[in-house]
Image 1 (cartoon, rainbow, N blue to C red):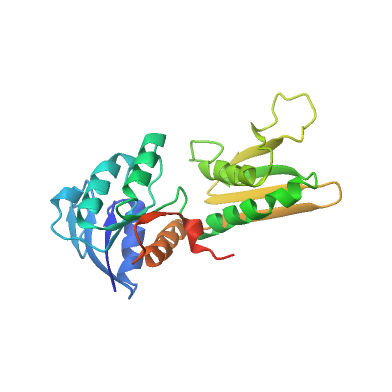
Image 2 (tube, rainbow, N blue to C red; image 1 turned 45 degrees about the vertical axis):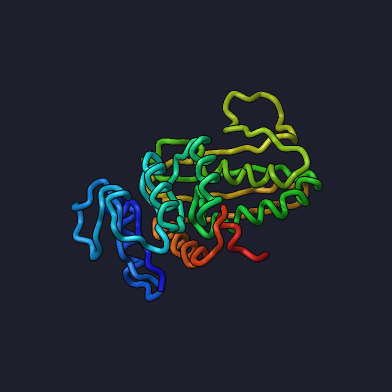
Length: 253
């Protein structure tokens, strides 16, 4: 059984994760961390800051805020705690710091904890080169609900980067077509955003050739997929040696 903690336990994702972990026989939920420790009646002790805790789990899943990173890394390093970092919004300096701490503890970090999106990313990294060499045009369409403020989505860029990592000459990203009067060139990846209704999240990568079209698509139905991915990552990371890991390390393709 894995003694586990949740950082950001009282946030929306933290509570989804709390319910799932509480029902999973592989986990013993021993503590939580949250800036609002008394917001919910959780069945474990919740501390305002990592340093306040006198409970040291085997592993912590973090769904908090990027500003909480430093304290969490220090706590984990001091007590030999593995980390699954599912928080978004880290800048380059913070990502560099995460990598530096991985020399002391096991850390799995992913900007998107969806198993499906990470599998899609792996497929793109593996096979985009074959399609690019055959002159397929590459376009990405992402769809989200009408409350999402950023466009295109961060995940759309993750997928575009995955394509570029596979091909010999990286392509330029073109956001939409408005105002463009020239024909499409071969050295670009078009990225398009749709906002409307309650669309939770949909990403489609299109490889358009002269005689056929290949479409690879992922549709998210709820926030549960991020919690499910984090739980899978925690089970995989448990007992791993210190080092830096990502979701794709879980795949054997």
